Length: 316
Image (cartoon, rainbow, N blue to C red; front, side, top):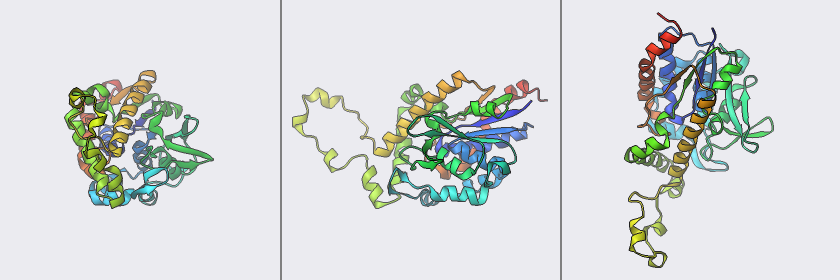
């Protein structure tokens, strides 16, 4: 039986994939094929290149300031950050150059920006494919590959179960990093979610004085209220008690809601044999410096379903 692993999207939360893969291998599971989306493609490229352990060690060593440097945050065409150094590190230290050099079959998913079609990669150069898959809209600029502008695969297929099956998998283990970000759950944990968004905003404020001006939750014009624009006191009472969200807060929250909804829809239409869902509610999308915590949660998420995995795969 050929086992496939579908690594879902989730930005910094994707470091949990490292712990999940390590825990699965410790259970005696031999992964035959891998498909990845966004950060899942990044980790998947390292895993299928035999470099998962070095990637985990590097990620665990990162400080918040190193992450800022790697992201290359600033005002640029098509995105808020270049991400050039992030993908350069992958190419130079943790990934083979071409798909045919990998230890096992690997597929990467991206989205055609103009047609909206799902685009998959299983051959050719790895780095351009991974970079396209990781091009989170508004954060990273779209990638030009084979005459198309491509963005994050999470727009259409956050957990690419179908690609595992296309690679010949008979049994698919899928990793959903968005389980804690369903709209109904966000409503129940509104305060915690707002705190995460505040940390994401702070990440960008630290990066550059110009970016700081763009991402402030409020500017001077927002601090005063023109009495002429208010119909009555009741309208004032209906205003949210929390500060107005920043641009990056709006972007990241919107992406989380979109990704969670698309994930539920895709998994319902093409369910995996095993679904692993780490508890990542406390982790912001840009907290790449918390890799060790995320790796440990990845391990715990496997432990929670270990008996189910053993039963379905007939493991002793």
